[in-house]
Structure formats: structure tokens, C-alpha cells
Image (cartoon, rainbow, N blue to C red):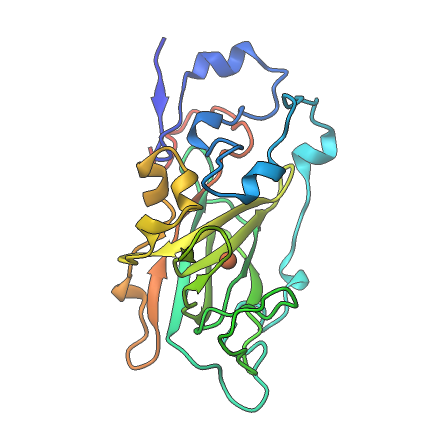
Length: 259
Ligand SMILES: [Fe+2]
């Protein structure tokens, strides 16, 4: 039986799909994910489930929705440099983050809601529970959103976030990172992940990224510097592509793009 392999590393057979038409979605390969219980990351001890998960039948609305349109997005929602600016622009390194949201066959996924939130350049979140002694930036809110275009591309402008400490073990620091949420037709529920920056020496010490069993999966969370997308004398740029397991795709006769 021929086995397809796509750029996300997912392996499955086309005939296997046809044998299980009742399954609207390809099952997630949980061996790629961190174990739910990873005591080195202390929060996981209380968060991890104690009983096996149940699989439920997908409903029609889960398979076909939700649907987002450009009218849902404000003009500055994808510009964290300006969307909270009061009496000046935020302090820090100006960057563009951009990428391609792809389905399991390597095709761009249009009209997908991409949301992002992050600490400011000093590593402080604008959040009531963040008590880190680094200052709040009065001109930086730290969150935004955008939609992928017709080809599945997204981009936003922001300030590069700083590292911050958290209460886990002594000297537990988070590397610079941006939190992402992906949501759109066929997602069933929003997908959450974190993007890291190429070359960050704190990444190899991070207990949260360290819960991911496959080093190659960690690499896929690291955005490389992309000088081609930088704006001279203005912004550096990083590229972060996001590959969705997504909805089971119809097998088209034409060659699948990206394979
Ligand atoms: Fe964070």
C-alpha cells in the first residue's frame, strides 16, 4: 500500500482514508506531542487528565465552521506597534512576523484566524497576574490578530518580546516567544502554539519546550530570521509557517501542491 509523506512529516496511506469514511478528521498523532504529565514542568501535574480521553463524533458545524471574513478584523489588529500606542511607539526591536498556514497536504489555508499575544520587549505581559519586576510599556498592549489571505499567508508587525522568569525551579526562564492561536473552518477547536526565535540560547533550557519529545518538532517552532522580508531601516523579519493536521482532504486528480 503506497504511503504518502508530506512536509509536516505525517505519514498515511490514501487507501487508508478511503477505508474509514466515517472519520471526518485525520486522527492526531499524539506521539508527536509532549506527554500530558511532565513533572519537570510543574503545572502539568495538576493539569494532566487522570482518565483516558473520549473520541466524539464530529457535528456538521464542527466540520464546516467557523467562518471568518476580513470585516471581522480591525485596521490595526495586525500591528502591535500601533494598536496600543498612546503618546509614542513602544520600546524595543521592531519586527515583522509572517508565514504560511498549510493543511496536511501542503496547501495554503485561506481565511484562517491567526491570533497572537506576547510579552513586551522587557519580558512583561500586560496582565494582572504578571508580577515580574520589568516595566510595563505604556504604548504596548501585546496582542493582535489577522486573517490568512486567499493563499494562506499571514503577517503582522510587533516588538520582539523579551525573556522572562517564571516560578518553576530556580532560574526557570522562558525564551523569547510569541503565543499563537489558529482557528478556522474545520479546526473544530482553536489550535494553540508558541513561536520561538532562531538562535535564542534560552531555548535549550526551556522546560516547556523541553516537554516535546521530538527535537525536530521543537525546530518547527523556531522562526528563522528572514532578511528578505525585512524592511530596510525599519523592521527585521522572522518567518513562521504553521502546518495544520486539518480536515481530511478530497483526493483531487491534479497533483497536490507542496508535495
Ligand atoms: Fe508566554
